[in-house]
Amino acid sequence: MPALNAANPIVTLLILTASLVVCSFFFGLVSKDYSWVDRMWSTAPIFYAWVYAVRGWFDPRLFIAAVIVTIWGLRLTYNFARKGGYTGMEDYRWPVLRKKIKSPIAWQLFNFGFISLFQISLFLLFTLPLYRIFLEPGKAPAAGFYITAFFYLLFVVFETVADQQQWNFHKIKQAIAGGKPLPGGLTPRQTDYANDAKDGYCRSGLFRLSRHPNYFGELAVWWTFYVMGSLHARDFLHWSLIGPLLLTLVFFGSTRFTEAITLSKYPSYTDFQKSVSAVIPWFPLRRGAEKDAEIQPAE
Image (cartoon, rainbow, N blue to C red; front, top):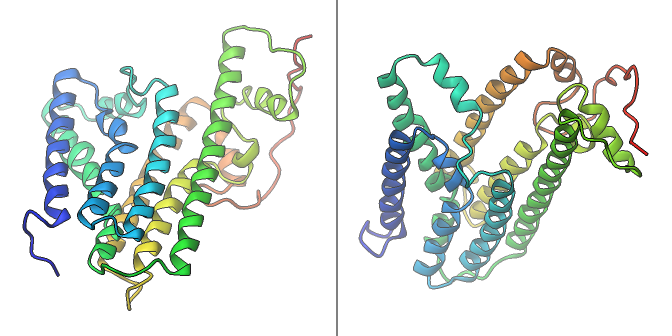
């Protein structure tokens, strides 16, 4: 294993990680906006991936991996930006959690320990499969590498579709809430969204198969990335497993917290929980109750 010196990408990335932790904590402390990690989520891993590619002298496997991570990151950045994520919009869950953590000191400890330190450390951990490739230079990409790269992009597409469906639903929901007439000629899917808006949450498209299909897409991306880095290892169970494993636990906790908020606003969500898988897409266990009346598009 290479020594931990300036030429080792891990040293560079540890310094980068520490810097991002300090920035996230300080910016949150000063601005009272605790979504700085969210703004880094889709951008920082791109830099992590390219550090490996550059330090690995653009090994074909590292270069390809950096390219597909860039595609993932740019797509996610666009989705976050169009929702106002870079214009001061804070994640709606943090104000809810702040009400539960009464002590300002306890909240700032949470800000440093979980929001900043733990979550930003995940950037380093779920990109560790690239370090495994870095440690085995000079190997040409095998067929399995290309297959996993293809599935990585396939899951990016899946997440893109889920995000777009959620975006379309919220646009129609906002129009209805604002009293705006719906345009004529709605597609069948748009009509489904309009009917879903009566409940307050999306249950059409991919959301018929998973309550959080975008979560599934994101997790599948990084589990595939782990497989990509494991192809040349003798033992599939490797220390780089810690990244996707911890990410899965974070998403599990996030799902429970998010759905608790949703249930507090929409009691009927409990029926949706009983009939539709939480994350992994699967056939609904039973059809939801039929609507009393469907929203008709305005002529």
